[in-house]
Length: 216
Ligand SMILES: Cc1cc2nc3c(=O)[nH]c(=O)nc-3n(C[C@H](O)[C@H](O)[C@H](O)COP(=O)(O)O)c2cc1C
Image (cartoon, rainbow, N blue to C red; front, side):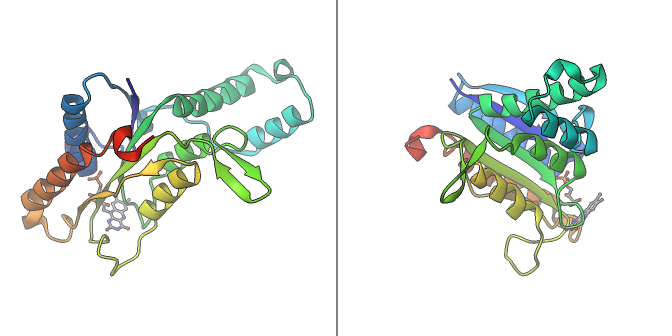
């Protein structure tokens, strides 16, 4: 049995977010193919995700210098605890499904904040004499990407998908090709066709979302 983390990063309700809808179709297919897997859903805009700020950076520095955790005030302990719990939840999962809209060529800020909680030196990657090395080598990930324009053909550049896939790969995760739900804002009359194409790709991708295919 695997645990799938479904990471939803649109603030809009699911029916209004195209990438979330297509990711949902993918998960329904996964449920059919891998009925023993369990899914944990994270709705990032309805969560309390600690931002890396001066209080966290200072606390981590103090912890490294030997300050006991219980020396921090209750608020800071709570913040550190929430951050660590998100890191641990990510480590405990086996598969990651990320649905994200493209915002100003990048990721929505809550997704950035969330990804900051899962890239932690000593836990999800470490430094070796050959450079950084991911510690999550027995995991799979996939990104469902909603974009107003078209980017998958490489004619225009955007930075959300390379960032998300790059970060997962940096952590050692094996990443499937991204499923784009793209171009609806620039061609609204094509909406049905674009969604159908993306759902079709999602259903095909589901067949590859298992460790046998990766020998893992
Ligand atoms: C704040 C904001 C910024 C956006 N920036 C871009 C952008 O840089 N490029 C683009 O093609 N579409 C952009 N869009 C359009 C969305 O990416 C598009 O509507 C997408 O379908 C939303 O994703 P979702 O429907 O999967 O949630 C932006 C939308 C919003 C609300």
